[in-house]
Length: 589
Image 1: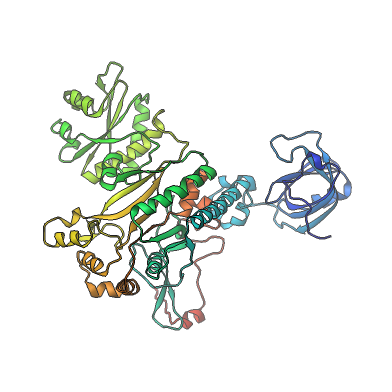
Image 2: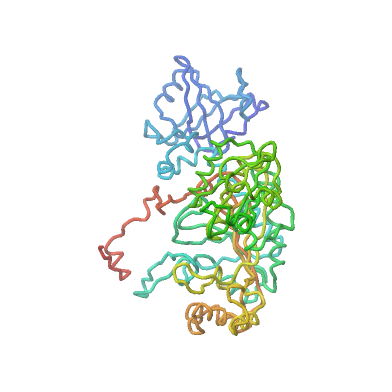
């Protein structure tokens, strides 16, 4: 018997009745209903087909098999007497006259039921990922990922971009996260690093004369996991354009992403260009975050002056932000529960009051704000049955708490959350510098390779004390979709003189720049074009499109939260001989 199939397990239909066929797949389930009568569900990558056992020989063969054994059956297609309209193959069944065991499952018990694997413990799913992938729901996420990547490649190629791969073994570079280091056997004491991103290489391609570059780039960062971040490695749609401005990058992304999201997403509506552009500082003040979810129509407003001296101690000495939610029917118990959730996320307590049917203020901190009623109504546009959430503290903390309140109460209040769509926006005008929390000194706020707005002239004005360095903006931007940051990008600093001056503000001189970024600095000294780029995360895009909560659901072989591969048992010890060859000695703490 050969293993060739005549059909897949999703292919047969009523018009195939009477055909001799050969199917191969996993024995998903067996239901015995008589001495020599059983119904077998045969599953392959494409779907399922019912196989009917009607004789003692076939029954004996099936009884000796555990579920998930792989088998081949040859037989005749016939019409089912009891049809299943929920299945594409629900009108037919196959009556086999031959059955071959291709590979036997040797375990009576599975770690989890295949079709309900997503309900299993995550550790079990990751350890037996090859079984988890047999679940059609899990498989479909990986198929979606493949289709999205293919669509991205096609779209970028149609826009004149060349797909160019960049090195995996490179040099350690200060790019914001920990590097994964690889010892160099031929160079004792020296290490390669896996690239955190192809940032320097794509800029060097621009210096090398290439005009439009992209790749589905693997990136490696030794950082902690979270819902939208996988530890270890991730992939991004990396792109760069020569002789380009911010507007050129926006035009490409706004043309590429919406059709893909509308076609492959859980929702079929995506923002049309141009996307809303929100300055970074405005986003913090209005949405309480630089990753706003524009499907929620709630906004924060500053009421610090209005509530100054109201007598409520938490409002004293800080800023107060208000989020007004019209037509809110939440009960006091529901409000308190949601506020408790907000406190956990924001790390600070928020407060509330409501207007009733008559427009009077009641509940929560109402007694402290009664005297400010008219000013609050005017500032917040309060009508009847409006809930107001108040956050307070230092500016950053009050803004964060307001942002958490928006994301928590928006979906909980009917009419304020349009879930079934993809809303994109650009966050622009990032500060070039900030005061570091740990150092207390001036540091780069985001990407040190970004061009400062105004170029060298702005830096020189700051150096002369004419402007505050903290007021310098960078030509940097983020793209955000439904509250998830897909990518940062920037117009690059392509001029060595501007680059050196920018680094001087963070106490790094010309020699430091040459030492840390020798290839890029030298390349720019030979004349580099102005260039700009961005790199939306593929994993995050597919997560949004699939409508799942964690990024691990759309990665074929993800690590767990502790950056462990439970299936392959990685990381793992190596032999002493391997360590000796690499000139590495382990120190016991």
